[in-house]
Length: 331
Image (cartoon, rainbow, N blue to C red; front, side):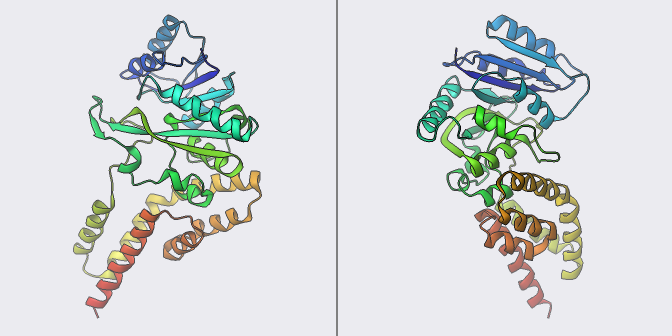
């Protein structure tokens, strides 16, 4: 067995938990322990999971919360209980390939040989996006989402806006765990927080290989977004057709986007401010100001800082071009 702890967090996942645990205990490099933290499930998730862990022969710790604390706090709890030098993050509904831990472990050890064990490190991989029956939706989460982890992982301001790390593909070392805990309040999610920390204070390393199935079933807390530029463009055009004037459309769109994204932007600001407290990077405060303002000027400001990925840039300028065209037509 290895020096890896698997931090497995569950909540009402009895339908998929067996497959996930079976994939963990079938690894070519077995974990040294499995930390099970169940967030007050009302179904048999905890019973099924603990039974499988007992049968596996792998050391484990099992905690069932008396009340629901949310996935961020649940992962914070699991990381705090882990006793090994490396921690693999694990959701309840995915399925790992049997070489997943071995590939991640070799990658993180290589980074420690270069940068030392005191360097906070997170390594992560791609994943195959699958449906409930594990039928392939897309062979690459990164390509489906039009993400560029090789580039973004080294650009902290871009990473603050657009996360490229899939939590359940991640392996972190003890140095990053110490730096990340406790999580700041109101962060978007735990893996994003550790991604920006490792990028700013250590090393964030992407492995361009799918090492698991990322199951989509309609109840994912985060999940893969099937939405892309063509669908977005169609949405914008259709909304224009339903409005009598550009002014009416823009007013409606602005309100809709404001209501939809305000909570997300507030949480982005929270984790950027948390990162500022650790790094002291004044540019992070400037980025927070841009996000708080909102609107096209905010997007341009973020873009000048290198904080908007190419896909977002295309969307911003596409909207601007449509607005200009409609204004010209209505003169």
